[in-house]
Length: 519
Ligand SMILES: *Cc1c(COP(=O)(O)O)cnc(C)c1O
Image (cartoon, rainbow, N blue to C red; front, side):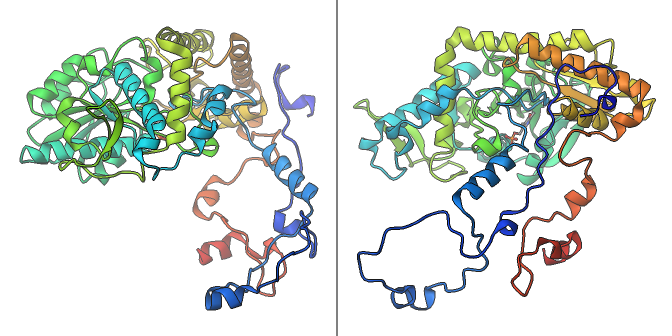
């Protein structure tokens, strides 16, 4: 990489492997194989004689390559990806922590990995025991009364939690009409309320970025089903009056839903069940170290108070009189299933391994380290970037691009520039209550050395924004692809390769325009 690409000398830079890799179909040449089979020692049967019309004769165009070509193709593609195993993801609100290898070892143990969901209960005591122990741990951590492990993501947990709230209100004779949501909320909160059939009432934050208590008192009425509140909020601030908030809601018969995606700041320190929360979700793929997307499915358990227990999704793991575990389907008030079988079981194993490996003191230490790391970044960068809310930070810190925007450099530009310095971008332009938000959550995984590299990179980017704004505005420069047209990528995605009508392998025949028409 040319020296002129940086103002100053960055300590950490990765140049992405610059390979012009064709699609696997384009690399294909007829007759190549990646395998060799032994001679048939039974009579050959043709598929049509066995399957009749159901036999598929036209297999379309399939890529034909040798084994090493396939290996190199996918290995090279893998080098284009950023990964938590390569470096830090400072994405705020996402809690991109390290996925410990011991989790993977445990989840691959034969008896666990190969358990079948239709295995009889008598042969499933071990896996039911894992679900039970994880449930007990999460109930203890949250201070709630009970839990369902079924939901497959945070947003899915919200959906499940709000369905519980609706079922509860319906059982009292009135489903109620609206859900209150602060303006700083994650986008999934209003979406969840709408999907569950509620009107969304927007609750304005006060000057500290917290719930405005007077405004809340004015808005809660007998038609309010719940308030959905993220705590700590998306600007990383603890709602210190949450007790009062719960009391105001409860006085009108409304429930307090807590978006628990940010539990990484609370585990081992304080419990939502103790400060008035009625129902909440957790993200095992955030707080409890299971992989985010790509590397594995998510998991968003929902913990709730006793009053909501009858409505939990079924089946529920129960302990029978003889001490064995069983699945209880006989739950007449249940909202039903929200996920096939019992949820993403492999994630339960990983999360439980993480909880047990850390133990209560270890989990508390994790929380303290996550908060310390965020505040270290805050202290080191407070002079470089504007902060709209000066309230004490917990696990994440939100800066604003105000100062750099004067030179035409926006949060998105600096996020992309960070890629040139070998980091994933921070969370850009969220939460929307902060102008040009730059939201950073380091998690406890990062060492002080890595944090210093990030701080160093951001300081240099701020200098570049002063001295050479165009350099930042046109970033990234060190990646295989430069800045993309994000609107076209979102509106006219080319999602699938197709052969041309004459069968030739030619992806150039598929322009974004023709792709848009076809889809
Ligand atoms: C991540 C997140 C969610 C959604 O979780 P998913 O698993 O991505 O669906 C909801 N709320 C907040 C505050 C989050 O950070």
